[in-house]
Image (tube, rainbow, N blue to C red; front, side, top):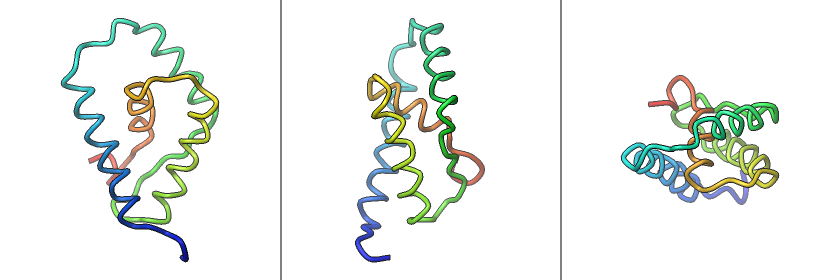
Length: 94
């Protein structure tokens, strides 16, 4: 596919994983109810699920779908990471 930048996709996926790890090591979120409402709102937008370990085109499409939802939601980077990683499944989850 012309115009695809595999390194940029890999870097974006690595950044998501690193941010997720940082969020897990950080302080506990005191806004549990707010986070549950945010997750509910996110899920109502039918976010795509990413399941494969190596699929550059699929990863790019997944990122675009997730980012489209985030443009409509006011969220911190930590919240975006939590929501995005919620949509990783199977091989991509590990």
